[in-house]
Length: 351
Image 1 (cartoon, rainbow, N blue to C red):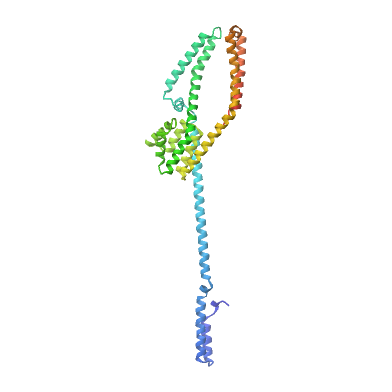
Image 2 (cartoon, rainbow, N blue to C red):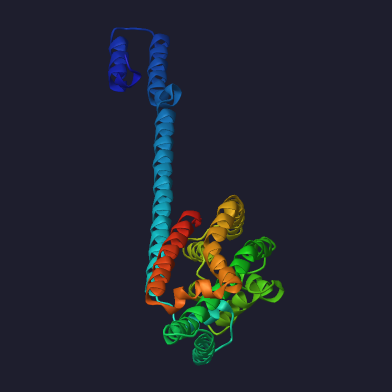
């Protein structure tokens, strides 16, 4: 029987009933003491049995669980918000990259590192085309002379200068790609030592070799006039459209929006860039033999024609002076172009 079910009034009634029955005072006192003891026990039973302690423990456990679930919800909300920010920043960068797909001549000159105006470039291109056309017109005699000189003039005006410009752009981009990982390591060491990111970029602009120093100097100058770092890096992508530069802009943009350890993120990026460059060099080494074979096969027909013209020009001249020879030469050039393009497609690896 639970002690709380014991009634104090019932105990007192029992004591009075015993006194009426003529019991002695000692017995009555004993019974009263038992009644008081029973009352005290009934009041102290929850503490003695541990029910209140158990209830407090259950309440504390449930409160801790509620607090833990609230913390887990907050962590999940933070992770979801960061993921949303990352997705939005990537979408922003992709839209900006798509909007700047058309490249002007001025941008190409900047990519090549040439301090030349587009007007000067076109003047030099026209002069080159005129010189090559005039030289061909003087060298080639016969009915095909004017036609050949016109074709050479067009190639010299629109083809050769742009090909040379693209070669300069490719060479400069390769130099930038080779030194970018070292520049990122400078930023990592500077951030770990407590320097701000702007100061690390200034160190790269002062101490790195070209073209790294020039490009980051331009970024620092833009930041000094109030342009945000993200926009300055977007302009760097326009001038230097490399996947490595896009990775750098994405890492810095995400860190500015979502937070995180910048030195660790840039350190991982530096390792990835070095691995990419190492893989590129390995692919080029494995494809060197195929490229050499393609170059030999591509250069063999023009070399044979040149040597035949030097040794016996009367034998080879009908190709240039007769209509049938011109048709044969045009067909040979067409087939040779198809073969060269096919070989280039086979040995051109994308990485």
